[in-house]
Amino acid sequence: MSVLAAALLSFAVIFVAELGDKSQLMAMTFALRYRWWIVISAITVATALVHLVSVAVGHYLGVAIPTALISIVGGVAYLIFGAWTLRGDSLSEDEQHKAGRTARSAFLAVTSAFLLAELGDKTMLATVTLATDHDTVGVWIGSTVGMVAADGLAIILGAMLGKHLPEGFIRIGAAILFFTFGIWLLLEGLFPGNAAGPIAGSAFIVLAIAIATVRSVRSRRCREVAADADEMQYQG
Image (cartoon, rainbow, N blue to C red; front, side, top):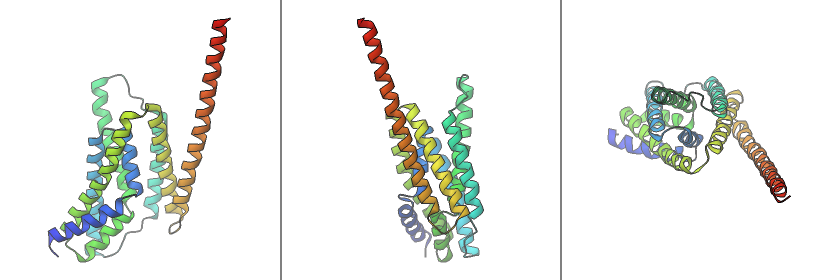
């Protein structure tokens, strides 16, 4: 099969496989916290590297590499990202200096996160399979572009939401998603081949939303009571 045909086939397969995948949610989450061009460039680099490994494995070995340990390491990394996001950014004062440092650290954070998440993911395994009997260069180009295009949709959504949501809401929401990915990847590594990861991740999101809702309602009631008390005191 020619390079172009392999690229088109790989683009279609990977784009469809990526729709609704956790990587899209990760891309949207990062886009809530960082500038879109940092996120898309980091994802492009990570995807190109992972799929380069994938086509090499598919072409020369025809088998997938073991991924349980990678999932565990990725899970721990996402739990760290969640804690970091929840704590908030702490470099604040030196404007110019900070801008350069934040962009660099954000790029490295997103690149490493996607490298860990994509190793062993279904898109990597699909790329390995495609490379076993199609042109490797075409598969690499098509799979990389397909994944970046799919994640680009999520990045656009994340960037749009980021302009309209309060900073505190974005920070807590992003932290919840990072913790969810961490739990998901950890359980995928510890218990491969079953649904423990997705189930636990979904349960964590439901629990976190319930807790956040209860706290929001209580906070609103406290503000209303305080406002009523102030009004009564003013009238008195």
